[in-house]
Length: 380
Image (cartoon, rainbow, N blue to C red; front, side):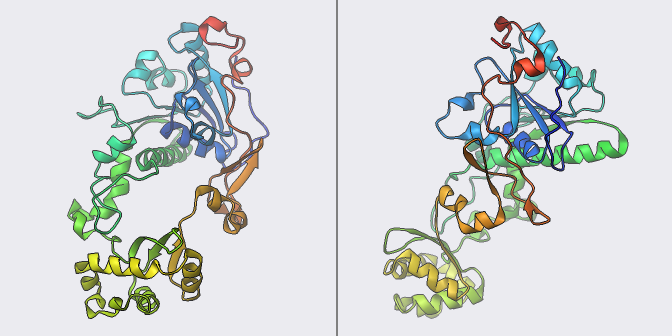
């Protein structure tokens, strides 16, 4: 009926105990980072399981590796009391409910702090626990919409579009993790825990802010990094190329090659950055015309020789199985799966570990909570 230790865990966060009440992506990804670094993360799931288990993407598997799963019905007094016993031994508690729900369920900060005064408790929600937006429903796209994240275009001459990656959710998870680690460091010094109120929309706005600059004065049409010379193009074999000739020296080398295929690129209008921006539509059409005359692999080889950043757009599977990923050691295998682990190298080795695949629903309920009656959401 208490937290069973895992002596096999290693890493910089070994010995840290994290109780995770979150679901879907932001909260689980935050606690997965902690788990990669050696923390013992216990994931509490409702009897039906985390909704992400039903998604056809591999979201659940990638956001919940290295964890243990406990099933509990938090509306049931016995299950809730058992979870609070776990919370009393946890260093960190993370919840991802809408504001006020955790408190109503009896697992809020005050409930846990009464049992563990120095707990670091993190609520990760869409818009935070305060403010007029706190009760708004939301997902990644609306968090991006209300934080400025969809106001900047990524491609020359196109209106802003969404990313294929859930930028807002990942931003929220990243800032929540940093805040947890900072709070733990402070607890080491002072002995005091704290309550962290992390909002996905706030984190997204922080990610967007370098585009807007001080006083948020940079408009979409003057954004940094969006040039015709820093965009995606289609090669002659249909492959997509990322062309990043932002600095003058790279543009000069790119232009020297491509002007042989599209002579219009030698036009003096494109001599200066200002000219390239003012005549960006014509410039993009000329670059596309040139690149369409040869295949992607040839272009990559030519520009690699010239030290210009031109690369073929690859899939995640191709990236993960590349010689570079292998050399960096950021892809690991466990239980027949491959996953990208915490990707920072320490003393030449990736800090993250892939110890175990995401657990089956409730796989560790009996181990951690004891044999609770099935009607209460416990082990069958």
